[in-house]
Length: 426
Image 1 (cartoon, rainbow, N blue to C red):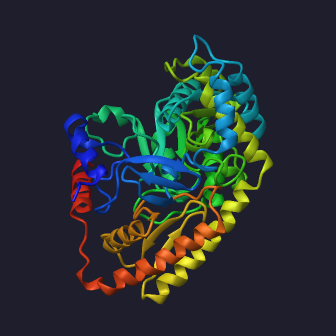
Image 2: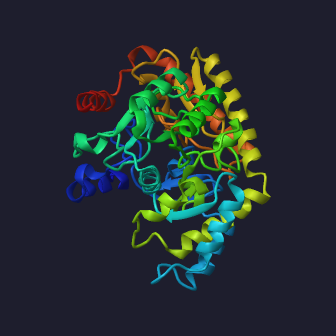
Image 3: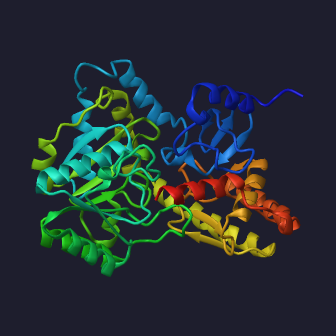
């Protein structure tokens, strides 16, 4: 029997890439059988290197908002590509995109563009420090703000000084936030917050409006900047900044992933309260000003404004959540489904080592549905009711399969090793 193409690619990659893969898309700590390499995407589906098709609930870890290869976005990108992409200076579309984002995001008076979420959050960090002349930032425990030395969750290769001017607080905990602000004293430059608590391995939490308001008040009292990291959730909870849902305006917001429906682009949006600081820092990249991703983003913004993409995803998410709860209960399981329904985290109750989550993920994959056992997932606008019903039918079969071998399911050695290594580095 011929070796699967994905397995062969993993072997080849291990010889020329450290560990064969790195970063958040590595499958080394996912259940056995998860493919590492994919050939194509179309709408809500992806095909791995062996030609297997999956309904994709990871959406490329977020960039797929409207559907892979959305014809409207691809056409806009192609039109710009015919003119030019990375040039000696930016194309006019940069100004148009900045104007568009400022018109759509209520707190924003200006925009700066880059490539990845880490670029945007690092720019926010620098701009806040430049604006305030201070060093200390507050970051919620367990929050992910990128993979630079100041924020990477696995700090191998970094030094303590990279995080020397950080204080931690607990998301949604006003007392904890106030204590961190007090500890920062007169050196507070910024409070960083996620739109909602979307840490891995733990239930998601929507922001408590009182906590969000207090964060704004504390920044105003101290002359510090409030930064909302929209990289993961941007345009998936609302057509504005996510904290507009709780009536709070930040000074800075960081955007990426779905901004160009898969095109490599991110952005830092800011209020006039941080314009001087943003204008004083030196940040750049050879490909940050590429025009094709900006043209794709401009069309994506049009679709966001003019269609019911968000309401469609929410309706599908409601259907998925209710159906999964019912199917799990029929087979003796109870799920912990948390977060917005269009960005679900699906974990098993009474499953501290994620053994049932891993086993269920394997069974879903075998039935053509790609789910993640401990990271939040995503719905995209290309999904249909038929897709959700297909996923629910697969889920029912998967619950039945793991119920039949419940007593013999063991925790993942790879996951346990990762947890031990992570604990040893902190």
